[in-house]
Length: 102
Image (cartoon, rainbow, N blue to C red):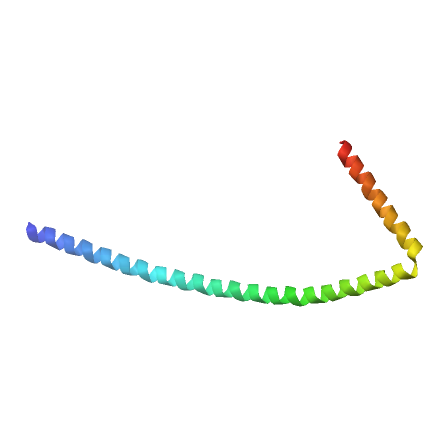
């Protein structure tokens, strides 16, 4: 009887050990897959950052050029500039008063 119980225990231990080994192998594969995906995401993020930085510089130069153009036009036509700024301020004042009353 003791030998049958011992054989059953040994068989169960062997089965558990083989299952644990299979799970470790599967976990290793999953870990490697996630690691590869992480490197891909990191590479994509770096590429996106470089693209945004490059286009951001272009946009900043464009905005600077346009701001210079507006400043030059404002110097050429000071009365029109004052009228436009006053109109914008008036619209902002009316919008503020309208929002305040509600």
